[in-house]
Image (cartoon, rainbow, N blue to C red; front, side, top):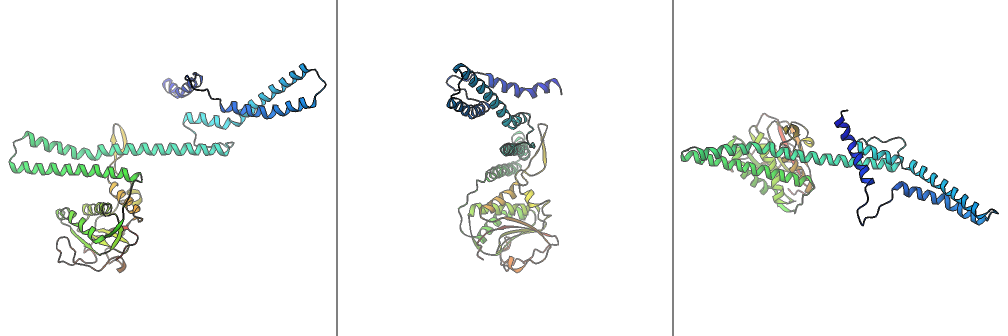
Length: 384
């Protein structure tokens, strides 16, 4: 170990010594140590019975000899109390030194139950602090990683708009692109804020009996331009009602639908089933388990200031949906299905509900050769 490392490792000990030896502030009472309290208790328990027995027996000895004898007994009792208190507090003192070194997780064979519980509490606290620090680092890394691209694009577009004599049509197109990048920035910020709020269990819903089909139709109308831009067929089937918070549930459905539109090959289908709300697409599906992917800030690593962090908003949408489902007493499920008809109890007969053509009947199965990805947001008390 270098001299610098050695001095750093000994710094906490020197600081602790200064704290102990420093006089207490004015008006503050110096508190006795735990060892001195133990010593006093053991001394009293050993000395007082001897004192009472000695003076009760009234031995035929001179008073001076009796006093000297009691002083000797008192000294022996104090020494015994000091030695026993040190032995009793040895595991605690050992734990103190190990906490200063940062190596206190493994218990010793002679640790009493209380010391083992204290070690476990310290370990749990350190884990929680590490988790919070990791979340904070991931949140900052996500800000840098996911907001950098739209900010750079907006900067280039603004520079082109102000530095070059663009024709009116091109100026309008640049303005539209700036608005799109701004909307993307706002969506990212809102998504991260929601994830931070939901991660702290701050999810409150005001459930009312709601027409689920109406919610799906509203989401489909808003997402339809994105589906059309990718040449996808977006459809809605099924009817039903359930006690939900419409704005909060609409946010969850929108997250699932936008994700499906982003990765689908040909079609996306929203459905009201006896289990709740389903979002089905013929995209490539999830790259891992839903439990692992539906976590905040779960995406590719980013190198920031020489440190590697987990960054990105890939898992934020699914995490928000999962928390909203749990707040409604349900859960988020994922299935990878072959392209075959689903059981009749999971989906209602087709109804004329295509977003693009209201007169067209939507088939019960998406006409695609790709396997199907089905996200189901289960809800209790669905009336179909």
